[in-house]
Length: 359
Image (tube, one colour):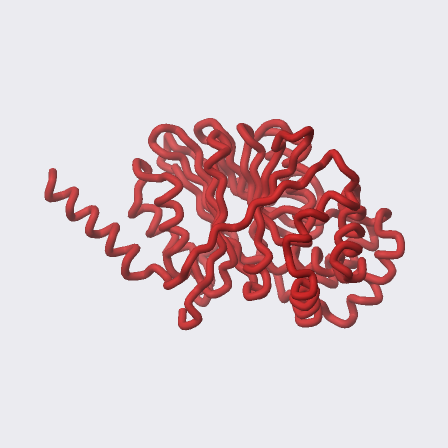
């Protein structure tokens, strides 16, 4: 028995030591957004923690690099009556952020659009042998060099009490990673459907026609308004939205975990935990789970190998961090790693990942 244990440990250590990416982690700063004050003002304190001259330069660079010239006429039409196209409180928050940082409303609108169409990621929901549900994610962006420097944990509070928490980027009013304490956790992965410029134009045209909603606003709406895992699951399955995505959602009870594959109008597939039949975890990257991943972007197979090496008995926040540090699950585009468990809200934590340039 002791010899078998040593062999198992050697295999696990070998897996992580030989294929882990060289990087260093930095604890993401944590701030509070007070939902009791006006939407225009609630982001001000957070934003003033940055050098706003540097912030403006970084955001302008990102927008100029990725937002196509054809988009600006449409954005100009949108921002003149933004509250007609974006639901409250998002239009008002964008307007307040623009005023605080000294950028045009159109630029902050473009920034939020860019976030919604350009994320690559790995999300994992897992049930340990005690029935505890864990949720972890890496968020990857081509904008990594800019976004690592503005990654934040945000506690949204009402009357001094945290009602939900997200990991975000300063200036982004939606959410890609979030937790409703003692209820559910949820993440978004982009469903790879084309290049960034085409996706931006498709999103803008849908907004003009008022046909659907930002996916990151949908996630924040779920955190703000849904009291249970089941309520949030139903919202994310049924509500119409702009971009095809994967939602990974986890609850607080055994088998409360799912990956929802979405197109604009509806869910195409709901893949659920089924621990009694051996499906104790789900791992989603940016491709339909029933199809093989592309050879030039296969984070799924190394991630699955790492999860199986850990095993259900040993899943926790530390081993999930190790899984999300295996190459190429962790890669040069990874901006941050978040670990969370809705049943244990204090577990929620995010580290910014700075990857060795040679990796």
